[in-house]
Length: 73
Image 1: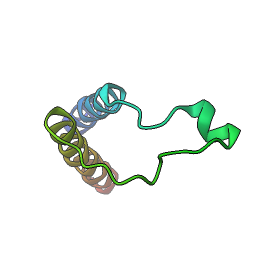
Image 2: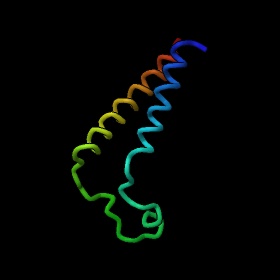
Image 3: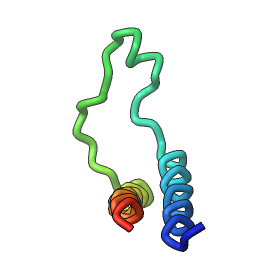
């Protein structure tokens, strides 16, 4: 296994962990039943949620970049 593949695997596992750690904004039952949803409600994230969101964004972007680099090599 190439080193880039190992790094990509670690970043993928980190991304999965970060996504699972985030709290759900809306329940799946409400989304499919047609009940009133707060999906488009503009609530600002603060504290832990904001940091978790930003870290997830950075790790997601790095995953995409590493995937492109791994394919190019």
